[in-house]
Amino acid sequence: MKQLWTLAALLLLLGSCNQQKTNNETKDDTAALEKTWWKEGILYQIYPQSFKDTDGDGFGDFQGVIEKMDYIDSLGIDLVWMNPFFESPLVDNGYDVANYRAILPRYGTMADFDAMLAGFHAHGIKFVLDVVVNHSSNQHEWFKQACTSRDNPYYHYYHWWPAEKGEPPYRYSLFDPEGGWDYVESVNAYYLHTFAEEQPDLNWENPKLRQEVYDIMKFWAEKGVDGFRMDAFQFASKDTTWPKFPEGHEKDFIKWYGMRPQLHEYLKEMNEEVLSKYPVFAVAEGAGSTFQDAHDLVDADRKELQMAYHFESVDLSRTPEGYTLSEFKEVFSRWDSAFAKKGWIAIFLSNHDNARLIDRFGNTSAAFRTPSTQMLNTFLLSMRGTPYTYYGDEIGMTNIDMPNIEDYVDVDAKGKYRAAVASGADLDAFMKVLNYSSRENGRTPMQWGGTANAGFTTETPWKRVNENYKEINVALQDQDPNSILNHFRKMTQVRKANPVLVYGDYKVLQKEHPSIYAYTRTLGDEKVLVLLNFSSEKAAIGLSGLEKFGNMLINNYPELEIEDFEVRLMPYQAVILKMEP
Ligand code: NOJ
Image (cartoon, rainbow, N blue to C red):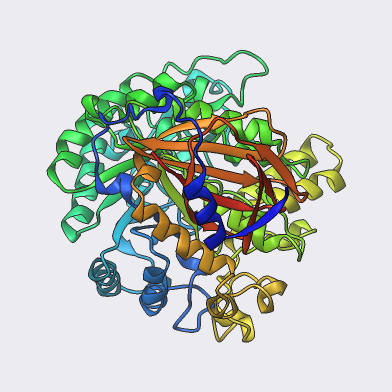
């Protein structure tokens, strides 16, 4: 007989269920994993330019972060990673650093930074610095010096192809359709840039350059930062014999352009010089192209980095066609199993390089925006790995409409458009994909309230606020116990109260189920069951054979429908149930 179970009723029922205990195939085999704060923490990513403006210049600033410190703390997060805020000509919004020890004035002063860092620490929140050292800005003093003469020691801080050898062999550039080499007349040589022309690659083969980087990291570690995110680091070591790569594979980046064996030597050195000397951890952006690569980066015994993040999950949904749940499960299950016994990864579905979480993985319609975002946040906060939440995803911020290329300021979007024009592509089709997938979607001002400019600034914001700010904002959701925001807060508490969600062994159930993602997490005698409906339809899953259910840890609907051992989930329903031993 079908019944609807509220939380209280469910507890009664579950307590009386007397199912057979399964054998110990899901027994905790992760005990060997060393337990540390950066594994147990939940990370919140702040894009400083878009968080909160206090001086009326239309750009977010450190004082704005300080003003919102209690809000950040209220999320129940433990770490904040902030995108670059160093002196920069801003060709790539700060990922082109002109001085690694100076603050870009729009964000405030070094004293403001110190106050912000102290504020985080006073709230028990650790701070992760973005370290952008695969490349610098072409406005960095090192590059300016390098361009004066081949005899200048800074010339060797970069990669060059002397023009007397003819044209350099073709290198693909991620942001520049004209390719990865650019000519400098004063030295009669071409320099390499993996990203934009204004972001020359640093030469990690030069020990002097490496020492400069370690000194920069020490400078920030001495200030008290707790972690480093190594931007684009897999490109730091490349094959400098500059071989020609097989036709058609020019864009196969990691394989042909990065992750050379020397990378590990550099990381060991960095670990010895910096990471081992301070109470910090470091996370690599990118995890190579194989599990072996990823393991080698983060295997604690190798003394390199502590955490890595791969792109396979965010790559699942780059076009309006979206993704399938079976691919989604496959990617997360595969990466989980690769790190089950050793190493550690980050779990994320969005960041400043991607369009918004809900547009790509959830459902933006008024009916399903709330449950689908809650469901995705339940997923992120119930997997093994350190969860990364991007600002705005805790309230379900969405993409904005940017149909014309003039709407974009991003170097990546502009580069891709130039490439589309040059190749004679269908520009209407191109713009549709860009409008959906551009990372600029994920950089709009934080929606604090229903007042002008969503309360982000009193003046003109650097980027227009999403028109939906009156319906999607912090002030509204703060009042509503069932909001996306309050669900997020509940979920961070659930994760903290249940170490099984951090360290527990992961096992996917009924992998072929077309709309429900079901998995267990097990740590010693503790076991939880996570049920997530990824679809806009009701869906059922038979669960006979599992142990008896216990407490319901979270549910984004008021009830859970169970008939015998079949659980029926509402659209985008997300529940976590404890299992009784
Ligand atoms: C990765 C960063 O996340 C991205 O925003 C940036 O454009 C490139 N690296 C270059 O630094």
